[in-house]
Length: 268
View 1 (cartoon, rainbow, N blue to C red):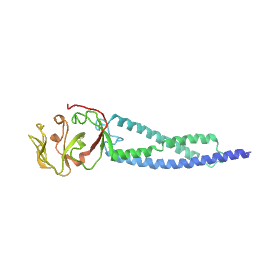
View 2 (view 1 turned 120 degrees about the vertical axis):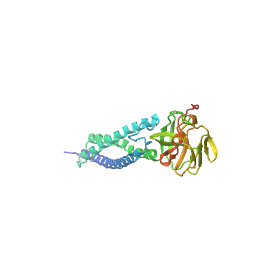
View 3 (view 1 turned 45 degrees about the vertical axis):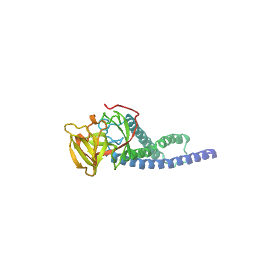
View 4 (view 1 turned 30 degrees about the horizontal axis):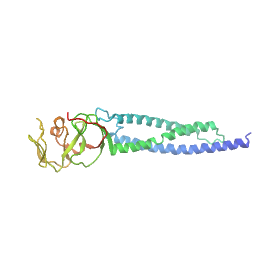
């Protein structure tokens, strides 16, 4: 025999339980949608070597600051925990979706714990999408290797690069050359008159460098549109366009906008 107090408590419990079930369904659907979008972005952005979640990226082929490596590993762990929490909530939702009149406080407490954990992790796919869009399409972290850009940049300096479509002379750029990622200074581009001979490098009639080695590629032409000429600031110790020639537009990956490291170094 159920008295009025028991019926009232059961009614209140059922009301609270049904409210939790409705909230659960909303965040489960939202998580699935956001997680699906993040998976699609994750797959699409694998072509970007500077994408911090690129599965083929290693420090050896794409040098990046230690903090970027730690962040990517940490976020992978958070994603796993978020996914597990929603799997647990989803199973609990379908298991406990029932029309019983009598719902105990213990049942509500147990389910509410699963809901609260999943609710905390519900922001993960949204944050992940934002991070992937910013990192995949606008900005990324990179790390300088070597001494070719001293004294402007030192070995192991951390920098932020911006993906751009247009470059200006004197931009510090990131480019790809024979599978390597290099940081250099853009000194000439399409439309500039470039002369490289035994006396030096001239851009639009102005001599900008006189260090010339055996094997330097000579030019006397107007650079075609879509091509660039780059030099390292440490001209005596830099593998640059003097050795590998003009850089194609598709091999230009972005320009450096911020130096994160607070370091100084002399020309080595």
